[in-house]
Length: 161
Image 1 (tube, one colour):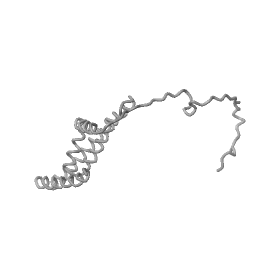
Image 2 (cartoon, one colour):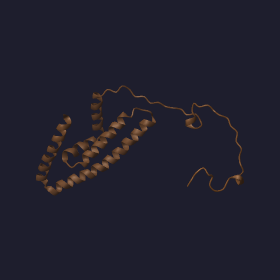
Image 3 (cartoon, helix red, strand yellow):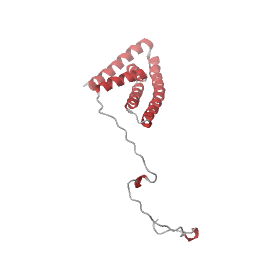
Image 4 (cartoon, helix red, strand yellow):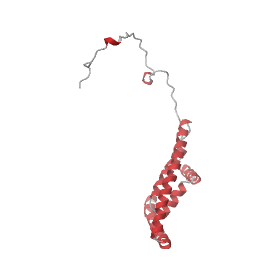
């Protein structure tokens, strides 16, 4: 139900703002502002996205809960979509989501509504050797090293061309 309201309300708000701003400053300055906010938003989303990706990798490396960096990354991605959508309301919400304090407040509000049972990280230690050999029996064998001049020349007959 909320999604339906959003799909109806956001375009109505955007049209009303376009009419108001366009009537106040004119059509060309209005279009220039929309284009400039899209370009500035793209730059900011890229830099914030790199930062969020670095935090996500760090949480994986330190075996910490990656929920925070994942949610921040999703909000940055959503803000990029809002900033690329023409309009003043979507730009305002998109720029607001690029502010880390706003994202953190939104994350706390989302987290209060969702119950997480737990987070575990498992590590495995590999023994030396091939990982596929872990837990298998060792078979001893003998080999003979052939001199280089005894190797057959040409096709071996094992493959067909």
